[in-house]
Image 1 (cartoon, rainbow, N blue to C red):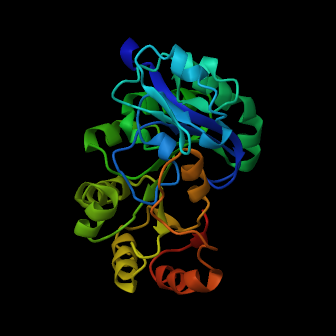
Image 2: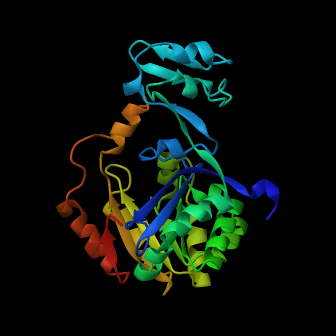
Length: 307
């Protein structure tokens, strides 16, 4: 691995997870994403680089951040709280150090492969006993393909199982290199109509569907993760097309995980001072999801709800 690709930008590392692959897992969330989904629940993971994000509810309008910012990238509104001008911010972190109220927080750590693997190895006994391992997620992990490949290769050498949680929108050449060290792919399908996919995520789905076909053809075990978003992809026609597509991919398909919309991300957007275009409320009920389960069970061996 070249020295310049030995480091990645990590958003978070969570241990003892049970919803991101089999067994107990450590999930490494990387920053950066090729898509811009309107319903995204992790807006802090969209940009690839480390960045300062405000927690507006913690701001007391003391002005300490204003006095230390060398590029005048920080502004504080009496009603809206702190704002960061991305075109001016150099991520010098002067404002983060000056803020004693945690109203300005750095998201994203530059970490080496060795540092990430050292954290993953802490629960190696749990992986062995539960059939777990490490899951690389995001953002979109394929936005940092060299780093992902290196982390997975290092984990494999330690006998740790590997999983890739991806939206599938990445050059096949990058995907193929990562798949060499991948035991399981968890693959998102958000919308089967490419025009609607572009409308809600910013890109078409041609590359995504072609990569799904190629992964299945290689025989790499794959589970499809399908968000159910009211008003965006919850039509019967979309489910029928998705189920038929997945059903034709063959024995590599282990099953489908349905991920019903929930409103919890709205609180995160509010905390960050961002607008969230999707409604609050109770989210989707079991009755809402039941017909979708039955439809997919006609095409795949297993369907779960919530991953």
